[in-house]
Length: 432
Image 1 (cartoon, one colour):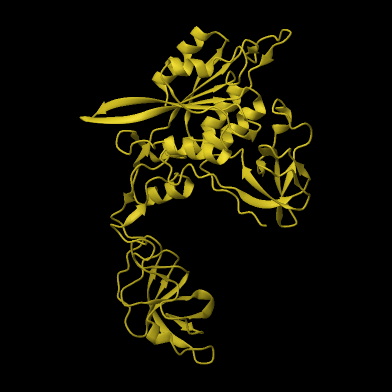
Image 2 (cartoon, helix red, strand yellow; image 1 turned 180 degrees about the horizontal axis):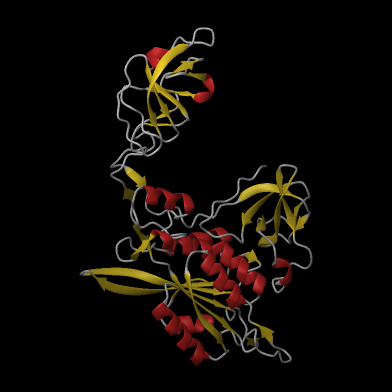
């Protein structure tokens, strides 16, 4: 049985990111939200495109106003009014100024903007009542970004700010990584679909729905293969179909040591290389991870990659915990996300006493809450059995009790992993 740390290392070392040439597609900006940029973007535009005013006021020559005050104002002639979108027609000469508005192009000869609150109008002129700083309220051409340099790097998620930048750069189509394909199925004779009438001994397959949602939340495309009964032939056919159509295959159930747990045996028959059979964690001990090598020939090159197989526990809480801990980071890395695969924990204060038998690394689900400016972990109420799905609702964090730790007292620090958020979202900044 592998430690959680060794399990994570093995999995992430086996994940090869999508190819930046073969595994990409071009989308328009309105379809780019949440996608991962596959190639760096440059622009031939400077930002700002020209020197412009950051304030409503007057464009002046600094040397004309550098010594003025309310007692001795500078008197300047207004020669032009420059709204945004207008090209100035005159050059500012000594003793002159132009009325200018926010975002408008600076006229030649002017190097400073005086805000209108520090002026007083008079016929055909303006009084400058306070000396500005040199070049005050002027946004210079190229001060935000210089044409020809990298505007956005590859491997980032395109959210609203990045899409705004691309639009401003007139980049209306972008190359993004395709979404990884993840096949999902559940195993067990006792499982039925939600719309079916329950008979004695049957349970609803909630795992497939939860895992599909988590896969979508991770930026991948789920391929749902339904429920597979405890029949080796059907299971082998389903796995073979999944391997032919997906980058990652996830099954839940059938990976323990029971008489009807066939997954590991079938994987061996299909030629899988087994890497993990159990992890020293609670919940989630019965975890299988295997790879199926494939060879693709594209553009004259022999490119090798592996399909990843995750056999998750059948108990719903265990299935979700192992997904958050291992599968989501694997999807992130596979998807081409820069830095993908890094599992980040934050230290917060525990509101409740947390207990474990200390024999395995233990995960306790609950909520991160901001209390008096400090984040606290509040343990979910009720049983923390791996079969209890109910109290997972509305949780957003997993607290970790390391191997050998049997107690974390209330108010003591605890490491937590944020859950229930898109993998591409930035974590919150947590106070300690």
